[in-house]
Image 1 (cartoon, rainbow, N blue to C red):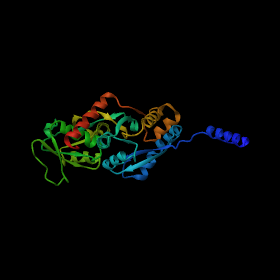
Image 2 (cartoon, rainbow, N blue to C red):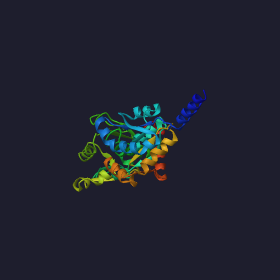
Image 3 (cartoon, rainbow, N blue to C red):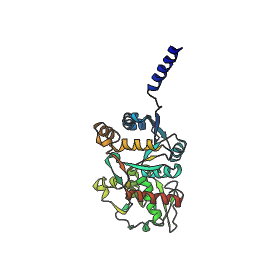
Image 4 (tube, rainbow, N blue to C red):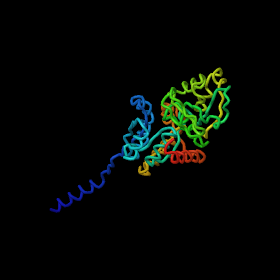
Length: 299
């Protein structure tokens, strides 16, 4: 009996010395696209890097969750299907508004820290200010674009001009004194063509793209307005994600540029330069954009 009691004590001691295993928590990164396979390939360098960096924090596996709309992405964040979301400011703001996600970091996508929108017209046109565009037509690229739609549209709203969507270029446009009609061209190059061929009076694209136009084309155009600058890309976390997870992921992203493996992953992830915090000036700009979305019930 004494031997049996001693044996039980030894067995209990051995059990207490065994390492306690904690199940790793998966991390789901969200992205909006209609190109599922291409998006998985695009994000693979980032997800693989985070997998190696976060495994010691009991975080993993790292998976990409694809959505085809801002509304669906917001639903996935609210339900916990997505933990962090990486996109340009416009989708990030809309998702933040609808899902309570926190815009925490910025990404230097393709090496670009920030960008802004320019509204342009033909060089020989009589338009020189946004007020001159009242009753006219403007072309934007697509409904998800930050610089080629959202920022330009917001600048019109701030000026007291109400943008009104047209179903197509053949549809008669509104000539109300405080309105401007807008259409989606589908491509920035098409926006430029429409302006040059007088199919619309104005267009909006980001400043870098305008600067890269061939001189022969650029010299036929003139910029009449610049929007404030915003981060090129934003990293948002769902509101109820554990703080230790937010801190661990943030640290992994912020320190990527400090190691050879991290720099290689950044370069492979669409030539990303680095991740960083969002400066106060950009935070103010983003907050102003949020307020306009509230006031206009989505621009």
